[in-house]
Length: 383
Image (tube, rainbow, N blue to C red):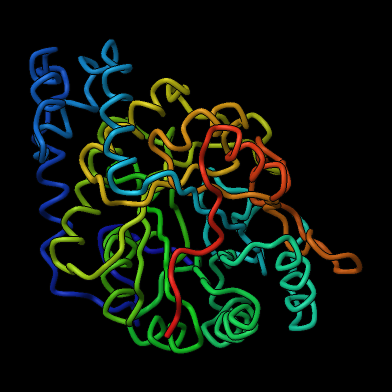
């Protein structure tokens, strides 16, 4: 499906009367990262509550030589708000059909990969295998296909997952408020949607076809999810698609504005970088190296000290181990990005991207404890 205006909406896509997109894009457009100085960065570190201007300073080139100072300040914020707890979860891909033509994704509709979706029996088998590892939180993922992964299919998977896990999160195609309400009623309480890049000019050629082409519909996803009853919403940009300074700034501003508009919401942030895929093994993040990723993570923690920050298995084990407790408060373990890879006897489909940390749940727990931290399987009780 093609749509000529990436800043418009497709039929049946809900449009919210919300000013947040204009606020975020306007502030990013007027930010010049080159004007910040060492003095600006030190002033931002000294503030107890940090402004959007402070956040931009912490993301600027002037902050790079002060990365150790950022790390020390970020660690204090992490300990103040989260103690020594590190939450664990794993993703479960239940389908890899997709109707979008994203140029960077292994699931893109024009990629020749092995497609499949799990049957109800396959979903149950995967859930039992994952629950046996001791995890109590799961993230259900699909490709973005209204035909093969509609709300009814996902809701059934959520109900099955809720029998085994205290927390069920979703990373699926953006849907309307009523669909999120249906999914929440089935047992889901967290939704993550990544804008990929917040630069509309860059977003256009990266999304030449499919309903994901609508930039504003994707941007408003977290608000629709919260209006549909979800407890937690996650934000992120896929680092390496465009200028990381601007994308990280937009991600943090978006999360902060949603928190202000919906004070009861729990906010989470992720920093995924581009990874090689089945369709393109050469894909790698452009100019986003580990020290730059760490700067982004520190800036997120200092600007949004209460937000949960996830570092996924896109990153190397040594990097993940070094950032837990400093900035990261949530990590995945026992991960596969393919469909049906956890239980024996379940047919599998190709993965979305290659992971860099293939350790089991037990191995990740050991790594957490080795740093004097506590692995936590759940952080709330349903009533």
